[in-house]
Image (cartoon, one colour):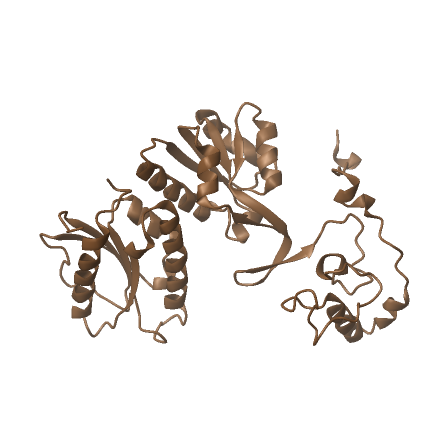
Length: 132
Length: 222
């Protein structure tokens, strides 16, 4: 399926992993950014609500492994992402729409590459069927 | 606490299919603690159901509320208005909570969103173990506060079976041998002599085997 829609991405991020200096949105994509003190705050309900609110893809940016300021926040984020992916598969939204990436705050361009990668994935996945 | 686990969404969808206006009712006590039916889980299930019904092309209005305890009328009352405003209730409580809602609101169909699994404890974060069968005749005082009725696969009351290996149960090697635990604990407490007391065959009439049970506290009845 070719991407013929303006994608909506919700990006949850730990404030220690990424700082939004300029908008990630463009003519092709709307990126809604939700910052958190630690990625360990992310929960199943936040992720599902993002999809319910119309996101075609949701991603969580977490600190590199072993670098979480609160020790295990990024591990908790991964566990919750996996659980939510299984719910998304169960309800027909497709768990692949939800991803997590380890990013380093010293490499801000990494996030632009992540957004491009998600847009590439959305060409296959198409728009969120629950948002139509 | 009463430990429960959410049913598969497909099963839930089948139960509530006839309804266009549905209340998902959470319970803020036991099932909240085991991450199955508290406020967060209620909101997550509501969101998931809204999305899946939308994908299916079904128009279902879903609202949510969580009360402190679904097994007590005082708390149930808080949900009366929303229950009255909806065609059916999807309860995220244990089986007792589901039935308490049904009893209090005889005209509202009530469905369980959880499978009630056992009476247990949180052994570690996210790990729950069964600790009590509710047999109605507690002998924990003799067994060093470790229940062989619940935790011994063979429910032996007068010592171990001899089949345990390295402290693990021969029925399921992932389960700790309850009798090993009992002996270790009684030894540490200096109460190993407890095991000289013969425990006669258990009278299961006080358990659910004797039929549904009822407890009447005359001192609390006016």
